[in-house]
Length: 121
Image (spheres, rainbow, N blue to C red):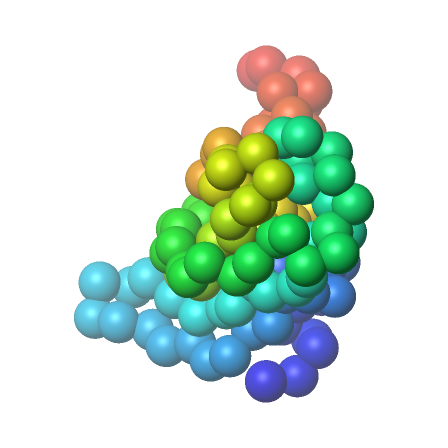
């Protein structure tokens, strides 16, 4: 897919790749993406990655975006799962498109804040 989809969704993360999309009969456009990278350090113990952090599989998350042309938009994101051998912890790949432990995109949050700032009639 082209980079235009990432711009359209407001994604600036170079580690996130949009693979494809489809629109179903229930008027929901679903994008499939992959988030994969090699972490520089463990977020739990802070050890610099020199082979202690291994890729441990995948976890799928569903990220919600604002409606476009009357259709709901969902990003089905396949995120890399990591294991730190130093502290025996597990953690998920993070992206700037959505806050940690959240499924609502930053674009949706900004849209809600602008709607709240509008005067009530």
